[in-house]
Amino acid sequence: MNEIIDFEGEISEEEKDVPSKRHSLTQTNITVFLGNDERFATFVELSLDSTSTDLSQFGIKNKDEVIPDISVYLESPPFDDELGEDEVRVRKMPDLAIEVLSPTQTINELLKKIKAYFALGIRSCWLVMPALEEVRVFSQQLQHYKNFDINNDETVVDELMDIQLPIQKIFRRRFAKTL
Image 1 (cartoon, rainbow, N blue to C red):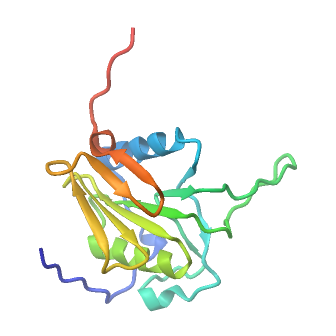
Image 2: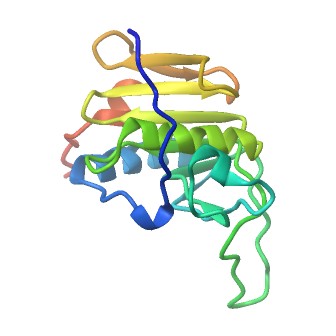
Image 3: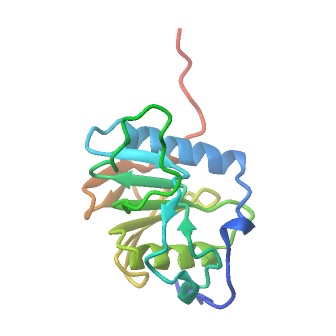
C-alpha cells in the first residue's frame, strides 16, 4: 500500500484531539494490558518536556511539551517523595510512545508527533487506529514499521520492547460479566 505523507502544516497540542468512545476504550485496553506487565510503568496523557529539541522542524507548534496517549517506561521516572510534590513536565523520555488515532485527528498529525518522539530519543512508537483495528509499530524511523491488523494477525509484536500483545485485547469491546 502506497501512502502520501504530507508533513506540511503545523499541529499543536492546543489543537488537541477529541477522543471518542472507541479511542478511550482502545487506550484503556492497551494501558491495562501493559500496566499489568511488571516490566513496564505505564502513564496516560503524560506531558513530556521537549525543550531540548526544536519541534517546529516537525510542524509542531507547542515547543515545550508533547503528550502521547500512552507512555511506557522500562524504568519509571523517579517520583519525589515529598507530599504534594509532583512533576508537571517529565524530562525522562519513555521507551515507548503510543498514539491512538481519534476521529478528529489525521494520520499525518500523528506521524509528525512520532517523528518528533524519535528525535527526543524515544525508542519505539505505535500508531493505533481503532476504526481500522490496525496497529503500526515503528522502530526509530517512520520508513520502517510493521503493520498488524485484526483480520490478519493474532499478535502485535514490538521486538525492541519485547512485547507480544494479542490484537483482540487491544480492540475488544465486550467484557465477560462477573458473578
